[in-house]
Length: 533
Image (cartoon, rainbow, N blue to C red):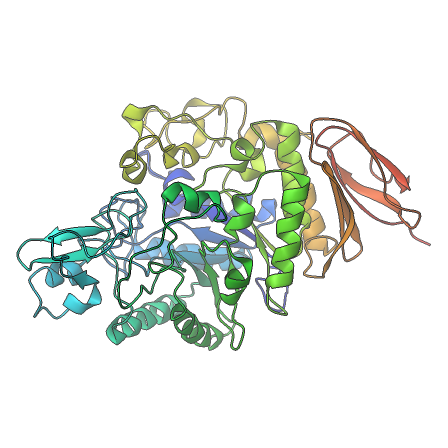
């Protein structure tokens, strides 16, 4: 890994949905040994850090986000030795390994919850959120789970409800109990001691709930569309101020290691000032946090630029911005943002690579991999199935296409992949490695520029030009110009903009000189630097 201070600043992080990346033993399920087999590819790709989707034992009601043992490895994915080997071999390749940590809830099959179900005197009863019914026998409040159903399930033997902001098989932990804090500090240290470089923290915004369990207020016209669709503002069920003390303590633990460990939060907060709070205002908290206002934005110049500029203004001094556009929940940006138009996909990759800070690619982003229409009979995501009308998250979790051969080189030709494949005869690693004009080749160029320090730096962003279709900005010495429209555009960058093109997704050849006006094809993006004197 290139030397950085700190090492995660300006890094390229690559999210691997382990079940879908590479199958080493022919059972149709990707595994940790398969990730080891792909380390040469990741190094060639310019990856500094891999973030693994949940690797801990789980009944798989939510594919690892329902943990039944925080100290183990899911047998579908391999063994503890496999994970130790991946960490060691990753280090040899200059690639750090981050795990997914799920502290908001456990599986209902976790020994803590099994004990809690024995009744109020149970040792682990207070590890979870319990409440009695209202006088009419209904749930304690109006909170909804992510499925849209009530967030409470009734436990007949005790006459109480337990809270689950996701499936009923994912009971929420009670962070008002100090013993829960101690448990997770032990979990952090256990994995840090094994060489894990950090954690992506699931539902980082949701650990604490209102102590009084007050009803959430109705959504308003000024709320984000996601909040409006839910119908309630999650004022009392998430984003509570007490969560910041948790992350201040976790940051102290992370910083006590050499090199320091990194904390990357899944922070669903659409108010950018409150989003910035997760980095820490008075004391350090998370080093990085996912910006879902950016992820959920429209792929339009004015909207994207406004969110990026407002984000950078809202972060504390020295904070590391994180830019990503795809993940296992929201699907793939080539479909969601770009409507499967390869020209727009290229423009999006240039934007992600040249914004200041750290970039997170979801596996297959570098290929322009699109969502897959998974037939209902083959869908496995119970969260989506529990909410009719919601697109299945399986669409963005399908196997990595390594080649055009049978089963895409993901698993053996005779195995049945755990989810169906997409258009692997056209979009796959082997073909794109051999194609100098492929999306993968474009990403390789961008990765080389990031490695050289010419783009992806953490220097301030300066706006050069912005209108309905074209956004131009400067970070350090590099200027990015993007036409985010399906029409050609001619723009004047100003008299002081005498530049040499480093990279273009359109017809502009390298070393072309730009002085003043620039002509852009639909969805063209280019990166340029000042001409040498």
